[in-house]
Length: 306
Length: 325
Image 1 (cartoon, each protein chain N blue to C red):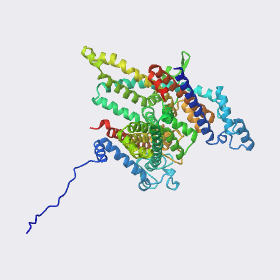
Image 2 (cartoon, rainbow over the protein chains, first blue to last red):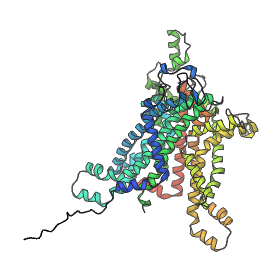
Image 3 (spheres, each protein chain N blue to C red):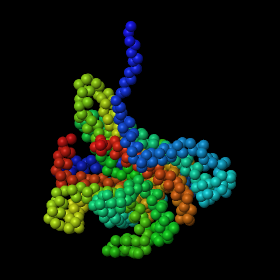
Image 4 (tube, helix red, strand yellow):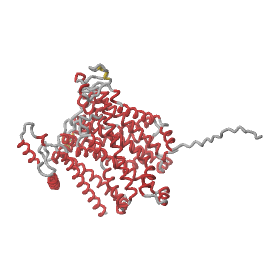
């Protein structure tokens, strides 16, 4: 007879290992301001994406806009019966609807130019860092030269040369901003290139391209993300500035900047809301991205690690 | 040293030449200025005559060659709209911009440095935290929006100062400026404050980090051990050491103030070069756009050249590094 030992199933509880991402997430949400800013930015993006579903009118469908509703103060009732909580502009558009539609354009331009500039700047910076020698010297000289001009001035020059339109604005912003990414990537990649894991990879006979893209690039992502957030915020703000000056987007593509410009002429007459509410929307967008970026810098900076 | 200067000079020339190509070809491809200039009921002959008068019938490379030849003799072409030489037009508007940028720089130094000093001396004080939060706002608020708010608050609601224009100008020592009349001063206050905002934030941050770094240094500890009063340590010893980098950086920012003045001038209808540029872009007045952009490029290239040469005199390592590559 054998004793049947009631054996309990052995469960191995693995020691809790935090992945870098989990640690990063925990550290990020420690800051209440940054969490709030991230939620705010998320909300702004959602409002912009779902704008057609949650606005009482499509402000650019002439059939839905009535000139009778022009310049109504906030809280007035529109001709069609809904309440214009933020008032209406000179052409009778509901400002709340116009702002959400404007945000779609502003965010698209800002994010598109940010991503394209990031990709181009990243590629150029990596090439500079890995090629070294003359190539690096020439690339970095060009980067330095460009960074000696303020980005706003470069963008202004480019729109003067390129003309109006969404594609042209994006191109102008990319030209104005790629150098910031290139400089960041090159500086980080130079540090990474000297580390042992790169040497080890080289000893294993791994190809150059693979070392650069699979090994060095992922380690350069942290500073890139920080620069990316800040530069995207400044791209949105730059686009608004150019559109406000009348040299950015045309009236047919009414971003937030165009809305503010349209309201400017009424401001001196005391009709503040036409400019102020789009301005507030721009402000919340830019400041929330900047706050997130500011905190990301603290969290991702290895020197600040506890 | 001479080799270094010559190399930098050649580089600067190359940049100016490249920019002239980009700017000239870019500006001359956009839009058709002829239809902005002839009256709507002009016939084909009139239009053809205008095109010929402006030289637009020539191939673009020939236009560029004529532009380069003129530029070498100090002639950047005539404005399509005003018929005056573009260079003269810009020089005529330059004093207003310079005066605005200069006032903004002074404001930034006078407001920014004391605030930064306070924030650096008492970093944990709630007032200091307020100052730093304010400087973050100063960095992230779009300049043009702040300008609108200033107009709304001070000009429309309170009615303290006028919102637009330059006001009366007076002559003093041969310089015409609105800084010399009360009316002019009231006109320059808002635009200068608007333009200065970003630089005030910069001055606060620079001064604060400078002070915080200096306060931990041995010479400050020694001065304390010697029994000097805090006031004397801060205003004589610390200030002497931090003012040089702060003032240098602020001086270098003068160029970007002139660049940024485009926005401020448009909002406050300040009759400077920036407003001229925006008007010229909108009216497709190509020679003025090209001339303005070339002057700005030249201006920045010159500033950088001077800074590079000064640094290489002050710090020979810069020079050696350049020759090494």
